[in-house]
Every structure is written in C-alpha cells, then in structure tokens.
Image (cartoon, rainbow, N blue to C red; front, side, top):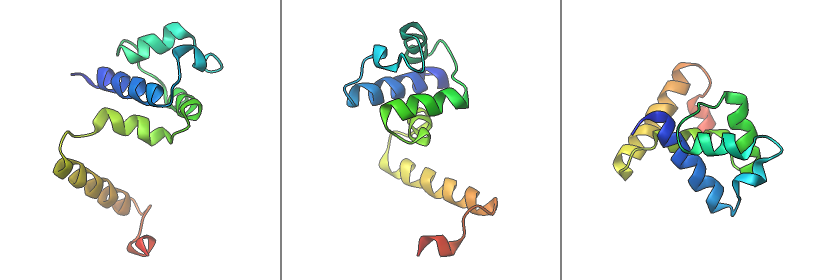
Length: 99
C-alpha cells in the first residue's frame, strides 16, 4: 500500500475514533477534499496536516506516524529508538531530556 493510501487510512481511523464526520472538517476542508485524502488520492501539505490534527484533537505527528507505523511491536520500538537517535544527532534532543 502506498504512502498516501496509508496516510488516508490513518486519517480516517483517527477521525472515526473521535466520532467525527468528514463534514465536521468544513472549517478547514471540504468533504470532497477529506474524501480524497482518506482514499489516498490527494497529498496534504504540512499546514493542512496541522489543521486536520487540530480538528481531531491530536498532535500532527500522530497523523504522520499512522502512515509510517510498522505492524509489529518490535518494529515500532525500533522505529521510536531510531527517531530519538536521529533527533539527538540533529542536536534537538540530549540525554538530559530523558530525566
């Protein structure tokens, strides 16, 4: 399954988990655009991801993570470790942040 489709599946699950309809996003998107996103036809901008996340009430990274989330617990743990190490290599995290 392609990345856009995976994002769409995650977006739809997040929306439904909060009991929201596509129409509930009318302040940030049309129902047609929401449908296109959920079907993996359109690619959202980073600004649009933030707007969608705000309506759902989640952090934008949660919507992105849904598209990249591995299927097993071990792979998820490895992914979290990788992201932490990469952020540390950018100088955005330090070991002291864990305390």
